[in-house]
Image (cartoon, rainbow over all chains, first blue to last red; front, side, top):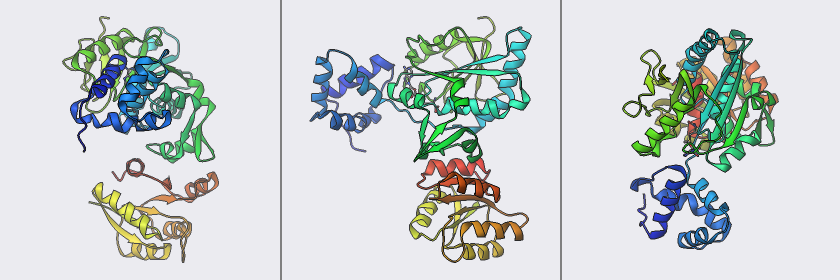
Length: 279
Length: 120
Ligand SMILES: C[S@@+](CC[C@H](N)C(=O)[O-])C[C@H]1O[C@@H](n2cnc3c(N)ncnc32)[C@H](O)[C@@H]1O
């Protein structure tokens, strides 16, 4: 990989990313800056990163800075990413959450927050999982709040249109036929699924969207680029919005161990964390 | 090691598929049409067949029908085709295909479909 020199402009773009999102680009990933911003430079007609940084400094509003931050984020996602996690959710975690809600005398609605949802595949996977298992819980409903700091990812999610290449990634063809309709070269998410999910642009470090507490929070493949301090802040935030005994799912290779006392790992459900009872 | 029979009349597609499959630690055999594939299925065992639809001599659909008729414990079958319409997808599933990949496809898609059918 080509090394890119850390010019003042690269440094200031990294600072912008960190200020807005909490993400740190390690030295080994700095090539991303040039690679990701190429399209922005071309579309906006800037000759160099220096010119771009000047323009961000001088802009009145916030549009260019937002566009640049969006371009720097890694939005990689797919349907049913890490399938065994979804299997565990369907088989064990949802039934446990329903049992708990029943014992506590709450209504028959499960509330889920997908924090860092990218273009929506994670939220729709969960909605499909819930509806596919419907016969096991006919009276229950699920409401999903899905948030991401990326305006472009949320715009794609809200459109409900998935390019063919992404539509088939991770998704069994039976689910594709059941929950999507072809539209030209793209696939459209069915209204039933779309009604279950509310998408919002939101920053995890200054969240406005989550209301109250959630039976399950998915915050997967988001922690990667945060410092330990930022991760701790984030866990505190997630803990605020997790109901006592509520579930937290992280990405493969991510953990809360050593970073928070608010969640503990679950020996019987590997990869799942639980909100401590003493909230 | 699992084995995949790649059935496609395009040499380029066979090469691309081989490259991806081998990177996933799956060994690869190749056939250039349905007839060739049937012969190979009779003489050796495969875990999964990656199957084009439109081919000379014998189409993917005809291959699948004959495979179903002759082979009780047949390999998993994943269609992999430019026929991307709903009609084709439904017909493939009705005929017993286990999964469906629309061309163009990438490594992640193929990997996930192999997971879904239980080969990975
Ligand atoms: C790699 S994607 C993971 C998407 C999905 N959760 C999954 O696992 O497939 C990470 C997402 O986190 C979002 N993100 C990063 N920093 C964020 C922040 N401070 N607030 C909200 N979302 C953030 C990014 O925009 C990106 O869409």
